[in-house]
Amino acid sequence: MTNYFSKLVVEDTEDTTSKNPGRRDKKKLSRLLEKEHKSKEDLQKIETLRTKLNVYDFGSEENIKKRDEEKQIQKNKEKARRKKKEKEIKKKEEAQKKIEEELKRKQEEEIQKRKREDEIQQKKREEERIREEEESKKKWEEKWKKKCEEERKRNERKEEAEKKSLTVSCIEKELQELNVNIPNDITTFINKPYDKKEYYKLARKYHPDKKKYKEEVITLFTQLINNHRPVLDIKNDESWEK
Image 1 (cartoon, helix red, strand yellow):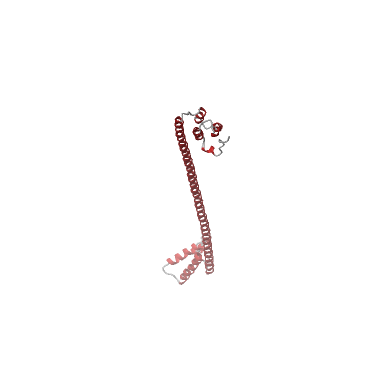
Image 2 (tube, one colour):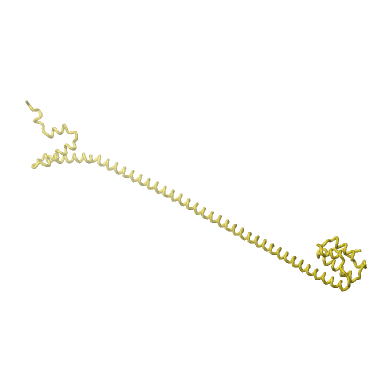
């Protein structure tokens, strides 16, 4: 049987069947480099294959230039994006810093406001304390003054009572020396609380103009009657009217 593919060279077969030209050319280059005795044609093929492989790896000079330009454009875009992002970050940081400064300012204002309010309240409390102390002192002084006045009046009444008692004793003694007793109506009058009507009644009854007793006796009776009369009631004295 005749073999129709016996005359085909391996390289030609690979040229028609390979789906990966780069891989195919690498194999060709490898085989050529492994040859011990390379012909001029082999060297040319090696150079050609190397050029083709460079094209596979990097493309043509035009493609390389275009790729470099695209890379530069991409690089510039990336740089612009980075710069924009940094600018946005800086802007956000400045905005955040501004917010923090504003918040700090408000907090300081609030602190100062509370401090002023506390000072006002403290001042009010101090004024209230001073006012209460002054009122308390005033009340105490009034109470003490009242107490002293009451004590003075008690002493005056006591002295007046003692004086009257002493006067009555003296008058009784003088009347005894004159062999005269104190009338019952005068005794009743001086032994009871002061009675204005009774006083005027006795004052008229034992008036010196009546001449029922001796002058010195009438004088002693009048002293008894008048000593029992309060001091305030002496201002408008009509006891000596007939």
